[in-house]
Image 1 (cartoon, helix red, strand yellow):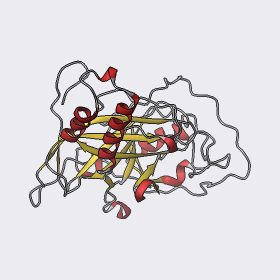
Image 2 (cartoon, helix red, strand yellow; image 1 turned 120 degrees about the vertical axis):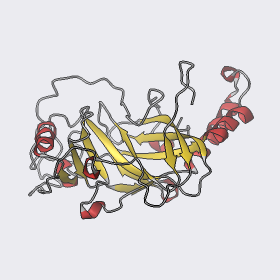
Image 3 (cartoon, rainbow, N blue to C red; image 1 turned 180 degrees about the vertical axis):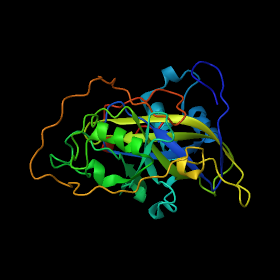
Length: 300
C-alpha cells in the first residue's frame, strides 16, 4: 500500500477464515470501546473516484458528505468478529494487556463487549479510566477483568501500574497506561474476496467526547490448508517464552466502592495526548470534535 511519504509497504497476508492478532496503545486513557473493520481497497478508491473531483481540496460540502458516507458504508459492511475460542478453558487468551514490547510479559483479561449499531459487538477497553467506576460510571474495576498473569514479573508490573487487588480504578497509571498494549484476536471472514484491504481500528472514548481511528494495509489471501496455523500466536502458543501463566485470581476485588477513594499521586511522566495504536499504523490517529454517538465520518 501507499504511504504518506510517497513510498510503498508490503502488507501482511491474512488468510480467509483465519484468526489474527490486533493491538493498540493509548498514552491517555479515556476508557470506552473499540472495534475493527475492513474495506476492500478497490472499493475505497472507487468512493474517491465517484464522489470527489480531481483536486479533493475543491470538493463541495455535498461531495465530501457523499464520499464520507460511501467510505463509511464500506467499512461497516465488514465489521470483524472477536475470537474467544478456548480462552475460557485457559488454553489461550481472548484479550491481553502486554507490557511494552515484551511479548512474554502480559496479563490475560476477561473481555467485555457491548452491542452497537446493527448488533455489532464492541469491546470495552480493559482498563477503566481513573475513578470511572468509583464515581458511578459504567464498566468494572480493573482486577475484575484479570484472568491470569504470564509470570510473577507480569503481576509485579501490573500491580505497580494499577495497584493491588483491593484497588478499583485509582492506580498510578490508570489514566496514563502507556506501558500497556491492548491485544485482541479477530476473525477474518471466510466470505470476503481476496485482495488488498484497509483495516480500520476505531476507539470511541467514554470519559471524553472523542473518537479516535487509524488504518493499516492488509492482504486477504486463500484459506489455510488443513493443519496449518495462522500467525496469531501468543506466548502461550510456543513462541519461546518458557513461562507458565499464573492463574491465581484476585479475592475481594471491589466492583463498586461504597465510598469514593482518593487517587494516588499523579503519574511521574506526563503523557502526550495522542494514542499510539500498534496495529501496523500508517497514519497518526485523528480525533474528531463530535460526540461518538453522532460521528458519521469514515474510519480512515
